[in-house]
Length: 492
Image (tube, rainbow, N blue to C red; front, side, top):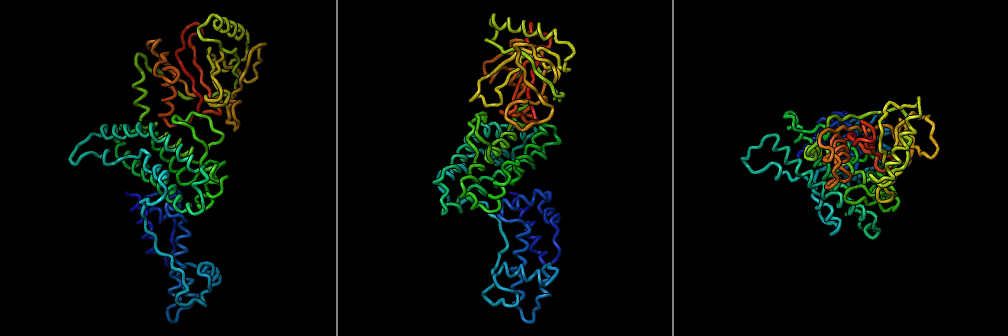
């Protein structure tokens, strides 16, 4: 547990320098971490800020110095970094409940130096099950038997194998954690202390420890070229969430929980921490995403960055990706007609009508002028809104809409609303090879082109705005009368 040693090194540095100026950068350097990241992790693991720890230790030692014969308040104030006797006296009185001039033996509060122990003891059976059920990295399994020699590729494969196991198990454990946080019977006042140990140390600190070790391990393998570099950003994003840097809508609730865990007795706070269950795949709709949902997504992103690149290669059987790119288009408008049952005579008539009329709309080309089958769920999850498909084209933002046609606007900027307008930023994959293979559906969530495009995105650590801005499109590079050989996927 190198992270424990690094935190201990930082604490030892503080202890040796309590009577000198302590720069936060120097403290974090002793933990081999950035200043901002270390301060968040210190707060997460210790339950107080570095500044609070230094102040408590100095005021604690100052009381003992004052009890020494011939001690002077001004000298002790200066020794522990206070510029004036008045500021020292105010801080001392708040801490000890008595002024420096009146402190007597037995009245001083002693704040002991911190030591670190992440062993989780006690708690309730069900919450402890959460702690132990997460599929965290088993380093004894990764490192192998003593004397075993592994290549960088073999070492990386073991990490990838772990990531696939974790992807199959962790989502359900996160959902169970959400249920526990929302269960009022588990949050009586007498249970708060145990629950704090379970959530803050048993879950958050354990994930932080795993990420720390995983980053070091992957950095050692990186020069060999086997590591997907996107995993490092995924780990950074996960660590930010673990240390309490959450999205704007949740920041107040998360900050209150980190500052004082008794805030979790408030059900409104717990609802924002827990969010809602999102199912094993994370694609179910929820009324509102909470802190635990974001942890679940961050955990998934790390795993996707590890195993998805290999899985994408495995999925390309009989066809291959010719080109993959991200495109940011100007604001534009999709215009089209709703799809009927695919390959039916009625649907072929819809296609013919759509593109015959759109061919006559001159002067409004968007720059992406292919025939497409545009698909979405109106900004809702697949469990709430069925699939909707539309034959048409992307046109300029001010393009007129023919009678009987529908349109959907796509903005070049992100607009924080559910559903329309969508965004005009997307990934585009083009394919070659066996047409039937790239349109195969058996064993795929939708079809092979959809799955491969999505999985490349996930493997690169790029976000998919599901469900609020989610859309996809099959692209017919040679016109709608021939099979589609490209795919578009909305991204953020």
